[in-house]
Image (cartoon, rainbow, N blue to C red; front, top):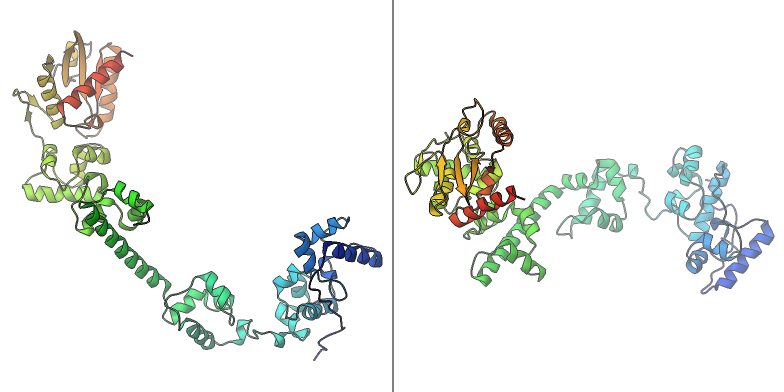
Length: 450
């Protein structure tokens, strides 16, 4: 076997070193060697290099404090003997077998030099006589069999209730190391799965337990408030540390509505929290209950379904929602309070508003009666408001191929004919209140004149 130590050195142990003393050591080294010392030079008879970092914050700052320029990083070409000497020198000074990382930290040769000369760092340690001196003699996992590594992992896990995270295992496992399991089994979590510790199952169980705790807290909050808690209630009590935030509840349960259903409480603002699929399922179930395709007007009689406004916002139109549920659209004729025929529920609402506020109007006037066109279009309403004639089109009631082009054509004809067109869309029916519809209409009229 190669001799373990090529030379003897004396390590000066100092309990306390002042900045002045350390700077004097730097000057002394420079005068003896004709160059600025490197970090790795302050070993043996010199005060430990650690004092430079401790006193000045870094080695280069210590050199600057002494009045010198820091050394530029130089790539050295080491011989085999020089590399062995560095390994043994490190062991002499630090009383432990070096690792590739610790050599780099303390300014010794880089790992590439060892690989170039020895083929591996392990071989370099062997030739320096240091491999058998490691506290962890099995750092290189090829010295273990698979079963030995798995048994070691079983012993590590026997007093633990759950799988630690990667950082915890890296800091607590000594032999074999976490990287050894990663190299042998693909990852340490794959090795854990082999011995019966499945991280995915643990995550799933954690989620189930977390959901149960969150659900219990929500039900407890309902008892405190004596009603179904809203999203605002959840956020308010989460700030007090009572429960999770609304955002967290949504990530776990999907929506407030789903949370309320699962907790067995009466839902609040049903439609706002329903998913698109839930809304379609509601229409299918409602058609079975009614024995026919639901109408827009039916929605207000069933508290468990979303509002008409919600359906229009999500699907673009009521008929789109009906078709999405694979139901046949209704072609109902509605009658206003005064008996006037209307082709849609929107027209019915608008007509009832005109009648209620006694606004003079006609219905289904042909376009050709007011402008020069051969098109067979008809206005939904023509009204007289404050002695001015306005033309009403309620767009988006029927969903059919090419309808958007028809809308653009109607708007263009009215513009060229200098007609005062009031465009009304499904989203304008944010309320079925006649007062709110009147405000909506008069607001659009004012906008025409601004």
